[in-house]
Length: 381
Image 1 (cartoon, rainbow, N blue to C red):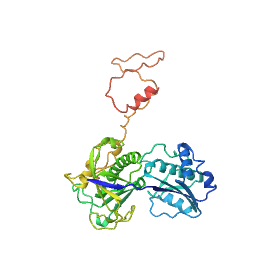
Image 2: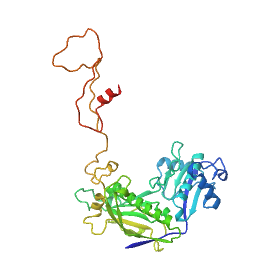
Image 3: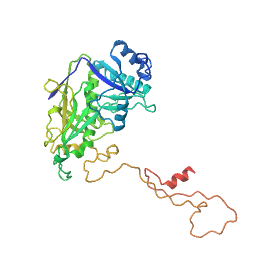
Image 4: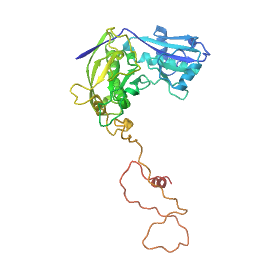
């Protein structure tokens, strides 16, 4: 089965710089003082009108953000904000949005402002020690965030590791895919204890969707829609750190009217056009047809066992995750005041003159990831 995704003529993406004051004129700053690899692109975009920067003498009022308490405190102290906007066709992705965010980074760094992506609801770091906009596009560079929704605690039963299907209180939905003319993706009905597993799986699916989508719009600049399969095969090469291959079923889904297991109060995420507008705003991610198990069984089956980067993803909270730590050093014996003498069966007579201690011959030992500390210190000496 094919899912038809409409491709708009243009896409608009915004970035907000909230600041206490703006000590310079934005027209003299943008695009001439945009440093790094995006200066030429910023000059071109500002010249043709696809990149605009607007200064507002009022505080910015957030709607739905995931800011920390410290970031919210900083935001309350601000009295002005700057809107950096880019409008470009899909085949200009991701250069257009990277150029806009590089411009917003430069502005925020210059005025010590708070850079916020209103689509993901997160703060983008702009401190002096932080790197600027990366020259290469990576989806993990704060282009996505995750809306994690659960039922009220009263409606969620106690976690029972022996019953994988007892809890279905969790829904995890992406925020940011529609910036690329893609529907958001959601995993709905998993156990609330699996929030890390669910987020990791959705991140992998998003990476595959974005990779295929950017390749398509770059080679089909005049396309008005795109057809994708409702079944997605995820291979180890689709995962940044490798992993187990697994299949994913994609289903058009209305996140505003989703049915989560039992009845309960839930924070809903509104994504894109309203229901009934004829556009697919969300794709539900689930196990392929014929999978012999529950959603929770499939979710745990997609995780690579004993993988260092996934060590904190514990699908069975009854047993604590094993931390990925280096092998401990062997206990170090007290350092003697004089060099060690070789062990002999017959004791030697006392020496009349001191002489350097001979180099001890060490017997071969099994190779380990971390040699004992005594050997490391002896080699350094």
